[in-house]
Image (cartoon, rainbow, N blue to C red; front, side):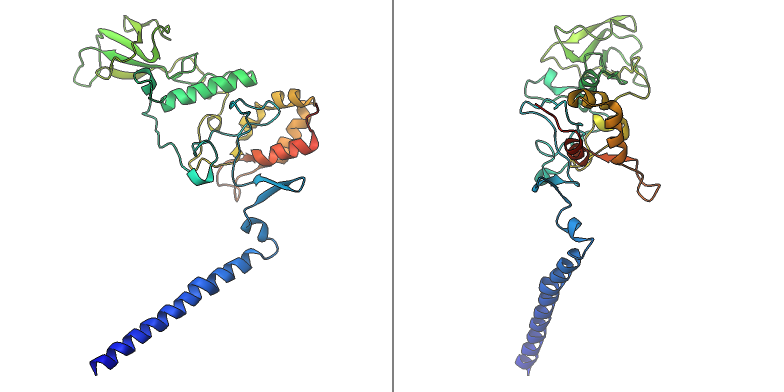
Length: 294
């Protein structure tokens, strides 16, 4: 009797396994595949691929870097936002840097194997873009040479942790023999950072500087997206690149602006997100309409 019950239970379990395997392993995948290839849906199901001259050149869901072998920006193309996914826009390494606003001290000043802080990375990118596009690349809390403007203020602290009478002030992101971005702070001459010396005993003080509150170089030009794969840039970042593109392709700025306007998408549903431009699609259209000669 017990054996008969045991067999019935296991046969029921086996039938359930076979039925669910057929449904979830065969019927459901085939149904999803069939629906995905209905007219109007098949393009997205195949990966939203972009084709030029009969060749697949990318996807409008994944960004690309428009740089040469040395990483320098190709002047004839709109530049994408930075990517933290692998070596850049690697779908197998999609990720953010996980660095936040408190990452302001460069490790490479004290350790040759260390990395630059997020603040210095943003400052350096902004300066590079400003120099390339001929605009003001300055931004708050950045030095004019493109590193984080951060002081280590060393001295006795009060009850609130403030140093009212510093005995030493060091620009921690400017390794000697660099000239500090600030001459004097609270009556004490600012020093450059000696490599290998730990200034963590001081209070870290970011210095805002005289950069405009709203930088000319927008935030998306100097920070990576959460996925590291975002193909979009803001209209503001596109606009500061127009003059360079027009000169490189020997066309008018108005011709470039018309293409930018044609590729500018508004907010999703009219209120979600911000206006955006798919830079991969824009550059493809740019090549079709105004190819580079020579």
